[in-house]
Image 1 (spheres, rainbow over the protein chains, first blue to last red):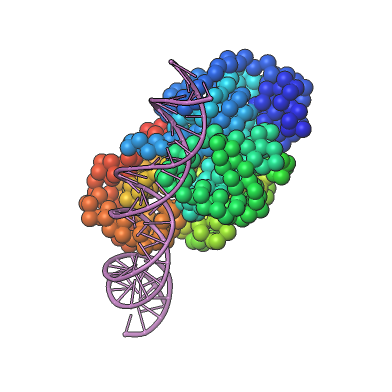
Image 2: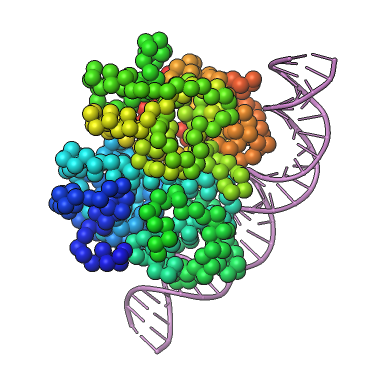
Length: 250
Length: 250
DNA sequence: CGTCAGCTTGAGGGACGTCAAGATGTGTGG
DNA sequence: CCACACATCTTGACGTCCCTCAAGCTGACG
């Protein structure tokens, strides 16, 4: 089912909104979403799509690739707060918050669709239920950051790493990028370090521990989970915070 | 101005919505907010108002006191993600997310006003702009969690502590609880530890360092900032993430 | 004036950071 | 198909921040 929708010409963000809305979209709503004027552009890896301090007049949907939301300290230390996959609309908050408090960067080559705020506002005026659905996506994003916060604040590097892998495999699975719990892992180790709040060296040692425990293998950008239950246990992973309709749908 | 509004009979959450909305409320909107049927109840310190896993049919506004949002690991470790003051509506997310991913507890005696979801939904249907304002509050809450995440992930205990004090003094100031940058600090040290992702013992040592640096004093539940610029510098504190209309309004 | 919650401090340990060197892998040009 | 360059990974040695355990101390309150 997940796989199919990728070949029906549906915009990935429409699929995402459908999966997140607590109601079935009408034909009109679906048509209006597809009719949104969208300027598509391609980004190289490690490019900022938007930057902290920006005052954007548009937001964007990620159509292909993996991106991340991050913030930096004045000293240049970087903390990644979320990863994004096809269908996500990571900066929808800019609709209501003038100044961005975050930056969003690509991890690998990404296709991005920009939509003017005015067009979104007009859409939401015409179809208020879509506003509820979008509000809901921002609430889910917030719930994911809170789980990450619990992670960095109160779990050690081993559990944090396991947790991140659990989330990635689950979320990649939803969009068809992780059949049988293995997936491409475009993030390099220093990037994982920024997501976990540790150093690249310690990422390396922690991955080794996860390998030695027989939970995963990770080679040439490919993550394979050998012991899903074991990995979940090490991470204390409970997918409830992702608010998926079917958490085990992989 | 801030002080005055406390004596005009306005519900604190109406003041908050007014300060956060990007437009001026009409008389009708204000009246509808005040007319919301609200069940007021009083909570002792250290009580949960709502708990992770709940499926509430109502949300609440904090009318008096200080509360906190937190999550726990299976091992019982606790991470506080946000503090709340009078006017905040910390679980408004429950309007769109059936199952709560967080718990919210009181820090000191709190007065709380519960409102049924149905009443809120009716209100938002009648006054869609209020929905935008509430959406905006949830986005600001999310921005605050992200700043905390940067804190715990990428700053040491000293800067984290300073940052927390900066945020508290600023936010307490907005609601009239911190004239001249000093305020009651009802959180005890183990609680601060849960907010910072460190241990109570280390909280103690870190506070001592802040005192020795001449930045603050903290005695018998009272925080006094002696060197605001110094404290901000130690914390790299930039109030932009709070999205206040006037960040220096104290 | 005793009791108890909360604060303070010391000593020792462990998780993670830092620095630095080498190994492995991957892409490119010849 | 090889040679080379460069990115990324890997490992070791050592340092530090923060944790743990445990003992006093202080202050509020009955």
